[in-house]
Length: 365
Image (cartoon, rainbow, N blue to C red; front, side, top):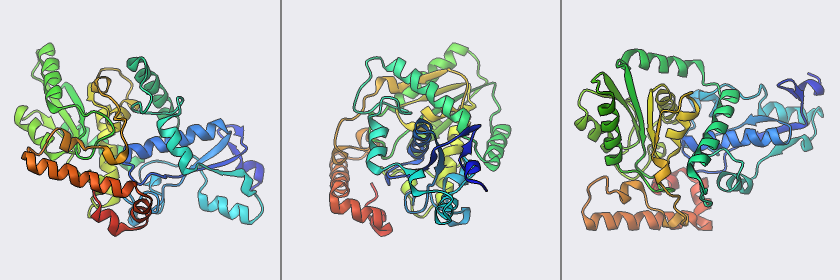
């Protein structure tokens, strides 16, 4: 293949390639999607061809050898047709120069993720927008544009979505909701009672019993509560969930592929619901980027970003006492979380956590 052909993409000659990798070991599935999309945005800005390389080293929680080496390609079609291995081969052969291959540093990725005003984002960070409604609408429109142009779920994923809809989505009105629990900590969590009140309002407003509620949650207690309150009306994915403060994506005993697929299925199934309720967490907002309506109840607008150091954050499970723990047990849990976070935040802790699978098992939080 000629050099000019290699650097031609989407009807335009390009200046090189941008390799998009993950630098955040604490990233859940939603965060990985955001890192990928912001990487694509960076590629656009420098007129480069994006190549997403989410590998075992950078994304250990979602890696599954049975599905290959690139985690992005477990779930999505390639954004461009080339691979990192091909790029390296072309450099060795002298077809490309190393200066034509660009990378995003860890510092740049972190800066973009929380500070860049032009970034794709599901929630604000250190700089609170003056008008939250306008900010969310703007980011949602941007997210929808990028998803429509660049994101193509694999055919086997789409077939699963179709099958679930055909067998479980039976009512004329489906309320979809995402309620985050477990380790969610970067923003003020929305209590389950707020969801109950909004579901009740929507049902009363329609005055029609032909409805179902699709519940997407990482917290088993939340699903139990919805089933108790809306018996016979709740539908959900048979997914791995947590009954404590540890997010399911950190469960080492579960297939990395399974953990990723379950989140993506929740996102896509939520996007098919006629009304969507969501909080500040990424999964609910990402679902809106895959849908074409604005029938939304956005609890994120009542939330706030927690402007604290990582070591001072407290999980939703703990903040809302989801497990109904005694005062003493809750204090002990909060202390344990804080000690682990402080260690991981330290220089030596970061190195150990990044390099050791055993350390990540011991330091679940």
